[in-house]
Image (cartoon, rainbow, N blue to C red; front, side):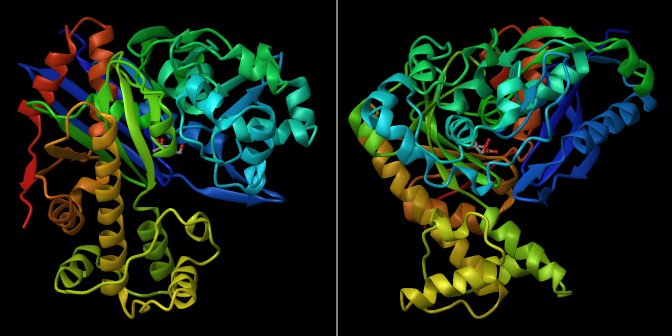
Length: 472
Ligand code: LFR
C-alpha cells in the first residue's frame, strides 16, 4: 500500500499537537494523535520555552502514530515566529530558547534605529517593527555581551531546531527566517549589510531552504525510539502563519485572511513585497509565504488576552464553561473597547488586574463579570480588524470584499459575527486546524502527491466545512 499519511508537528504559544493527515480520493482526513501544553518558564532573569520537553512530546506523538500502524510518508514542523536556539560547534544546544515575551528587548528597537533609519530598514526587510522580533533579541544579546553568542556556531529558528535534532541537518527555512526582521524582502536572503552594520555575526546564518523541500531522513536512533521508519523530514511553511495561510479555502478574488489564534494576523497574499512608506507607517509586514507568495499582513494581539483570563479564572477555582460564557456575551449590547496591542497586556502578572487598571486610568466602565470581559475583548479585536482592513485597502490595488478566518479562533462565533458586523463584509470561518492542514498538504506537494497550489486549495475546500457570517 502507498504511504499517504503525513505527520504535522504544530507548535503554538499555548499548546503543541501532532496531527496525522491522510489524502485519499482528493480529500484530506486529519486526526489529532497527541496534544500537549507549551508553557513559558520563568527561570532566574528570563522567560524560556522548554525545548527538551517539547521535543520529547513530539517524539511521543510520533510513537503513538507509529503504534496506530499508520503508513507515514513524512513529517513537517511548524511553530510560532521569531524565537530561536543557538548551537555550538559540537552541535549542542546552548541553553533553552528565550521567549519573545521576555523583557530583554524593551527599549532595544530605539537603539537599533540610532544606527539605521526606520525607513531604510523597512525598505530592506519589509517587516513591521515589533520589539519581539529576532533582530532585537539578538541585538540585546550583543549589547549584554552574552557569552552564548560568542561561542555560537549557528542560529536555528524554533522549527529549524526541531528539524535539526530530527535529522542532523542545520538549515534555516525561508518563511520562519522572514520573521527575523533581517531577511531582505526582495532577494529572500540574509541582509548582510544590515547584519554587518549592527555587528551581528554572519556565520550564525546558513543556507535558506524553501518550504516544500525534503530536508533529510529521520535519524536512525529517533526512528528506532519512536517505531517509525527513517521517513523524510520535509520543510513546510515552518512559520505557523505561513502554513495556515497555505490552507485558506478561498474562492474568488479580493479576499483577505485572518489567521486567528494567540495572535491575529490579518492581511492578503501578494506576489511582490509592498515596501512603501505608507505600508511602513500603517505597520504592515511582508512575511514569506509557503507558496512563493508574500503574506502582507498586520500583526495584532489576538486571543492571548482571553487565553490568559481563562487561565486566571481556572486557577482561582472558578467553573469556566467557555461556550456558555460566549452565549451570555452575545446578549450584552454595550461594551467598552480596549487597545489589545497596548504594552500593559503583553505579559502581565495578572491580566484581569491590568484590564481593570487600563479602564480605570481612562475612566472607562470596568467589565463586571466573565461575559462582559469576553464581550469587551471580542469587540475590541473586531474593531482592530476593521482598522487594519481600512488601512490595507489604502495600500493594495483593490479593496477586499470578503474575509477568511482560519485557525482556532475561527471557532469563536461571537468574534466572527462581530467582525462581519463592524467590517461590513462577509466572514467565512474555518478550518480551525488550518496550520496543520497547510503543513500536511505542503509535504504532499514536496513528495509529488499534489501538483499545484490550486490543488491544495481544492482539497481544503472539499475536505473541510466553513461557515459564512453576513454583516448585520
Ligand atoms: C503566530 C505567530 C505570529 C508571530 C508571533 C510571534 O503564532 O507566529 O505570526 O508574530 O506568533 O512569533
